[in-house]
Length: 354
Image 1 (cartoon, rainbow, N blue to C red):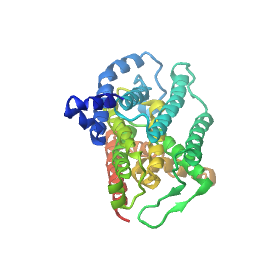
Image 2: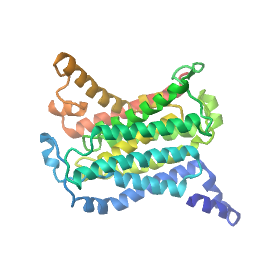
Image 3: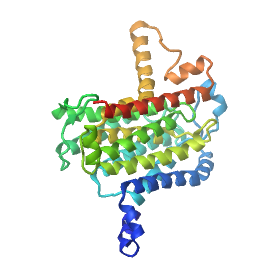
Image 4: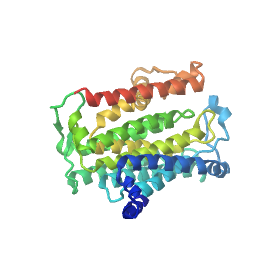
């Protein structure tokens, strides 16, 4: 809450008045988390190199020795940035922060089990799923029964007048969006820079969306649901941008560190919560198109093999399919980034085409 302290000094110098502006705090949050990751990154990587390294696929054998659990660095930078530049009394921000920490703890437990307790399989998938569903249920109940007066409506894209009131079924939507986004990012985290680069695109998109939805003039102009106070999430998303950029510096090919479940589960889940709180769940589906494709490739592969006994892809998630077809890793990642940019731009276009 450094910004509030600085803002109190405006009576002594009018220049401190800038800290009341959301845009200023967004920029400061982004640069703070970026600086923290870049500064502590080399030290963190050196510390993590002492741990057992993750088991890798045969065609990734050259990466053996690369440390993991880099999500600790990302989440830590975001939390510090939020404490400094965000309004911690904002109820929407607290829910986003809860989701980040909750899933980071879940992911850390999995990483800890693998690389410190030396249990190669980590925690059971069911444990992760229970954690995700429990978080979704908590957030859904808070929105449904708490003092938010949030409503249970969803707003499909392209149509201004169509609003669906889901009632009690809204709880299932919250659970699904959070769980799906968390697992989709986790699935995508298989190549150097692929997941964090795609997260960066989605974070940029929702920085803009949360700012617009929290501004009555912009929301009214675009025909979006105005949600008072949700603009503070733009500071949260901006801190994700900075931390993602910083981590990409070390995670770009050839990666010096992997984010592990600590990062992938928490980043995916928190972006899902931001989409819920801004009532832009469909925008997340479009903006996170790379994550959707990766997750669908796994679902299609499993369904095809169980029903037909045949595989559709050489290997899933989809990025491994292209690897086995001879595509260089860097080419796959850059092309997926291009797709992520296209999906992000399309999601923003859907805000206007109504």
